[in-house]
Structures are given as structure tokens and as C-alpha cells.
Image 1 (cartoon, helix red, strand yellow):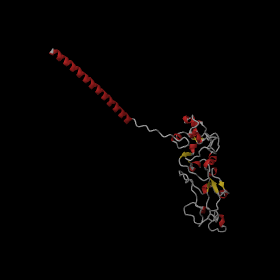
Image 2 (cartoon, one colour; image 1 turned 135 degrees about the vertical axis):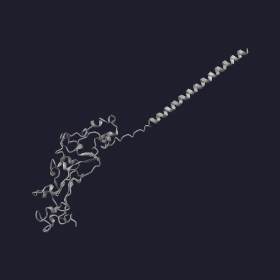
Image 3 (cartoon, rainbow, N blue to C red; image 1 turned 180 degrees about the horizontal axis):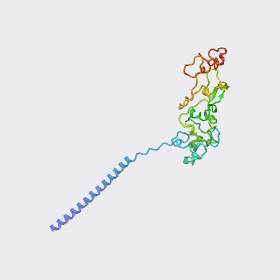
Image 4 (cartoon, helix red, strand yellow; image 1 turned 180 degrees about the vertical axis):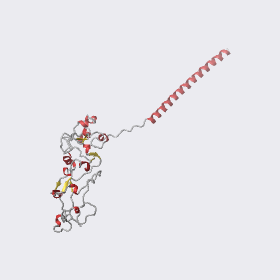
Length: 285
């Protein structure tokens, strides 16, 4: 009887220990799984940065300086078929090739760049382009008179500027004109992104009664008689100008005295008619 009770007690104790071991194993497995998941999530957060939503571009404005625009060739949008000085609208196709989503919605802000509720408005003017020009390179092909004409009774010379400059440039830069295998009729031949620099269309002459036209009529005088082209000079300083002085001309500098020396032309000793050069409104001592 005592032997049977001992065996029964051992059996119960064994089952109890097995149950405790099973519970302990289950708890270990649960904690191990939770630790694995927690560590995996932490590692994923460390490897994957938090995604910050990108700001949406402003499709209601057009900007040439947009990085996606600057990497495209100019002739993709600006196709030249003639020598019209005013660039023609490129139409929808060049824009729709990239802006598919915006063109699929006729209420997109992109449409307001060119369209109003009742018609079409002018395309935004250029505000982010400058012009490149090298006098030295052009003098190998043509002369000053190709671009510079006497204006206002011959007092000054014209300077190609703005859209009207195309009339002068397109004399040589045709739509399909090439030099050295390069198309020189593309916008990028003369224009580059940057700060817009406006240039007057008229070059002021001296503060005296001077006429380019009258001087160019005289034999032996041309642009090179007074102006020198500086190779590689920055824009605005590629061509020198003589000093508008005859009586007090600085030594070593080109001035009126080079010709007005009382030999080649009337000089400093001729005061018969001062108004030949000086006007009261413009000359100051």
C-alpha cells in the first residue's frame, strides 16, 4: 500500500515538473520572439531613414533655371524654321513629354502659365538668361558695320539688344548654319543661364558734338582707327574707347588729338568755331 502511494506521488510530481518545464519553455520562446522582433524593427529604423515628403514644384510658373530644364537641349523647345526675330511658341508637345500627369488634368496650375479662362496670354519674359558675345572671334568673319549702324543723325552707333538683336545675329546665324560641325543657330550659341544683363540699344557718343557717321565718311578712317578689340575681354570691356579730349589729351591714351593735331585735321590752336565739337548743354569744364 505504501509502495503504491510512493509511485503515485512520483508520477504526479513528474507530470508537474514536465508541465512547469513546458510553461517555462513557452515563456522563453515568447520572450525570444518578442526580442527578435524588437531588434529587427530597431535595425530597420536605423537602416531606413524617415521618409520626408518632398515639396511639390510650383507648376504655375516657368523657370529656365529649373535643373530638369537646364539639362535639356534648347532646340527641343525652340525650333527655328526661319529668321523671325521673335521666338515662336513651342506648343504642347515638348512640355507634355515630361509633364504627363499635369497635362492629363486641364485644371492643373501648369495650364495657367499660358492660358487664361478665355484665351492665351504672352509667355513669361526671359529673366534668367544672359548673352555671350566675343568681338575678337566675330572680327575674323565680319566687320563692325554688320551690327553697329549710325543712329540719331549719326551721333551714336546702334547696339544689338533684346529680341531685336536677332535681326543682326540671324544675318549669319541661320537655323541650320554649322561651323566646325556645330550648329550655331541654337539658342545656346549666344545665351546661357545666369543673371539677365540689359544693354542699351544705343551707344552714347561723347559729351561733345561728335558724329560717327561724319567721321566714317572721311577717307582713311574706320572703326579700328579709334577702337581696339581686346582678345578674351569680359563683356562690356572687349572694345576700347578713345578719350573724348583734344586740348588735354592724356599721354599714351588714344584720343581725339591723334588726328586733331592741326596737321591731319583742325587742332588745339584752331578756335575759329568751338561749336564744331562743343555744345553748351553737354560740355563741362
